[in-house]
Image (cartoon, rainbow, N blue to C red; front, side, top):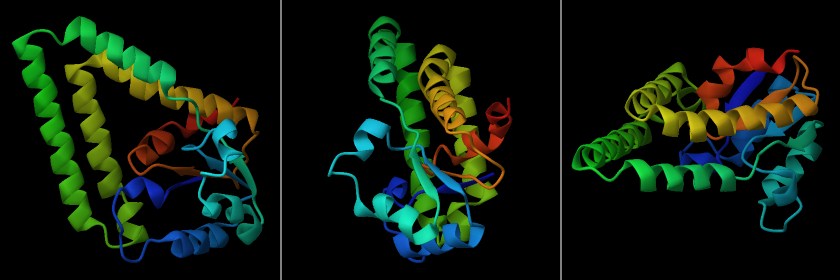
Length: 188
């Protein structure tokens, strides 16, 4: 099973990685199913979803399965955690430090990304993997209760869609490493 980064998740325009390029990459892979991790089933039916996602199935011949989940429970967890735990100067400094690291990573990647090979690269994955390992070491409960639990919930949705070895996960760029590292969770 392959995992590719979506175009929408980049936050910037990257020359050489637009919807047409992504559709071509997906076409070359020939997936039977494409799991969209950024869009839930409820969201997929709304008109606000870019036409690209609706046309992806027609242009690739794959079945499109929205596999995203609501962020509400994870945002609520985050809000409660912050209210209860980030009330000391030391914890505020740690939070600000993590924000600086996050900004630095995205600024570096904006310069590094030149097309599909750099966006879907081990360099990109390694930076986000390191970021989340650091975040976990500083705020384990928060990282586990939001980042990890959200992704595990999405994996459960993907499992219900009965993925095969020929299936594809289309994820946000920051989550790509997580799905690649946890493909074993999709096996029964």
